[in-house]
Image 1 (cartoon, rainbow, N blue to C red):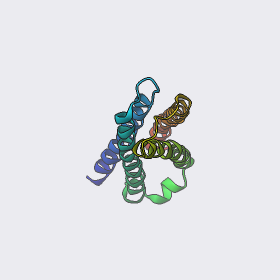
Image 2 (cartoon, one colour):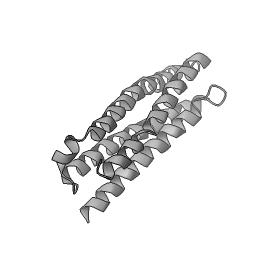
Image 3 (cartoon, rainbow, N blue to C red):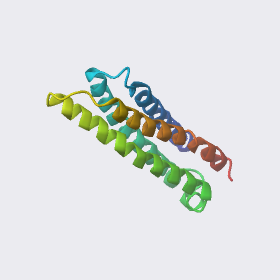
Image 4 (cartoon, one colour):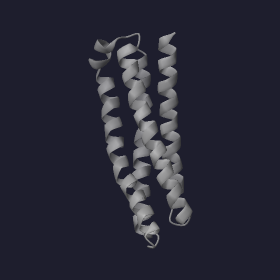
Length: 147
């Protein structure tokens, strides 16, 4: 029974990651963003980081407690491809996270909304990261089939 539960938690965490990254991308538009939206972006970002951690932890649980065993996973290049993409996306998430918090702090200090160019830059990074996340399941499907 452990293997299906591990798979369920990992897939659920991954779906959460996609949902909150997509929500960030949708909200991060100059024409839609207002002070309340900046606050929402910061909350979404916090949830996104929780989902990111859940993906990593549930993936590690599958590696160590899953049916195939850690030696099989760690010796498979597809796991390394997934981990590489995961790390790339996680690092990419840092920039927008800092921007969102900076925007919130500036607004709280009585400052203005971020510039359209700053919003577009954050959105571009979020969009690229979100699209890269979508490639990870391709490696996962092949890995699950024993490649």
